[in-house]
Length: 69
Image 1 (cartoon, helix red, strand yellow):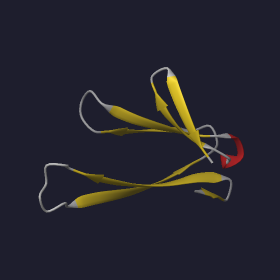
Image 2 (cartoon, helix red, strand yellow):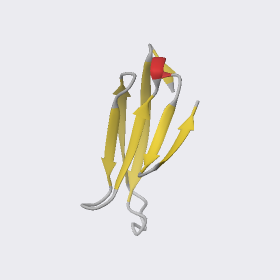
Image 3 (cartoon, helix red, strand yellow):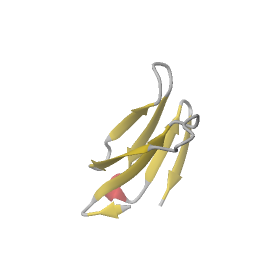
Image 4 (tube, helix red, strand yellow):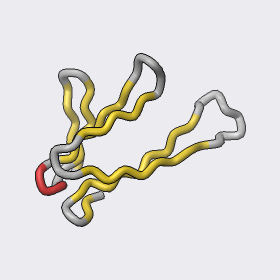
């Protein structure tokens, strides 16, 4: 969600094997051009990049990029 020329991100993280479905949440505020990595394990990572003027938020996966407005 764009706000104050920043990308404000809210993420919910949970273990799919948890029958009680306990979760944790994080809030991240990115400046335009900044990237954040959310690691799910030692070998897996999910990356997000804030676009110019916080007009887009892109999920980056290796050579692929997916953008959202």
